[in-house]
Image (cartoon, rainbow, N blue to C red; front, side, top):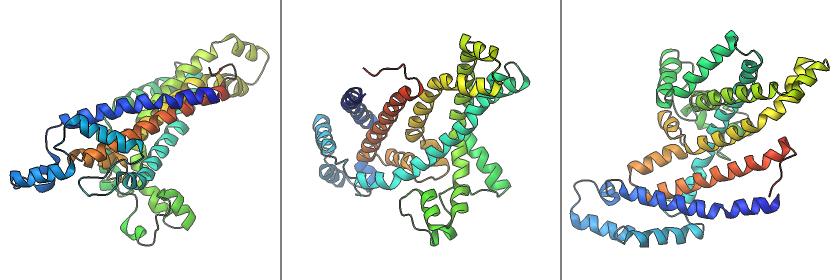
Length: 334
């Protein structure tokens, strides 16, 4: 397993190089000049050219890319050209918010999606099965921005049950200290503002978790239906085992392999694809930070942020692959 893990880690190098090159090229294809964005439309050409030279934007693209790679290999993700703050420090500040949101959304999807998928498979072609099919189709098809705005309108604007944006209210934040950046953990450690933090997390987590929830329902249902038709399941039932034992001890474990794969892929996607959700709810995570970086033509922010997200995505997938042996001992790592 260690040799397999080592090969997969070495495989990260060409993947990250390819991603960094694609991001670099696409960023420079976007119309607009960071120097003009910083100085404003009224800046004269001399001022713009002076700033471009200071930022290194007047150098040839291959030179800029090589310099970016050099800094990247030394662990330096660069400095924002908009606020002059190190990318590494900004990532450290933003990362906990995105991780907390993605983890909450994934927990909602797993806690609801897997049991509902099992129920739909066990009661195949029933009213419940048809209802879950319709729900999963709606969940996958519903645009994230539309669902987010709908939830804000319903629960924040009309009912006033939940806050529409942010991670904590102004009143709660006055006595709250962000120790680790994970507000749920910090609230638990300080024994204060837990309700405030949770209320801010519910709507964005529901919005972000709807699509993974629908996908997990369908995948779990399909995997369970396939396993339930196997001979060993029929044999277990013929032995007179309780249906609960057949489903959860014999069928579910073998049906979990594709489900775990989807959980890993979806979690990696949530970590890097929460831009819309974070923007709608003003959630101060990596997604909102990347969105602001794109608007400001802040090349170092977007390059460093995307490479970081890609690294996390590949590591999550590696962990998912390594977990296969725990679910199925027949799997060998070579």
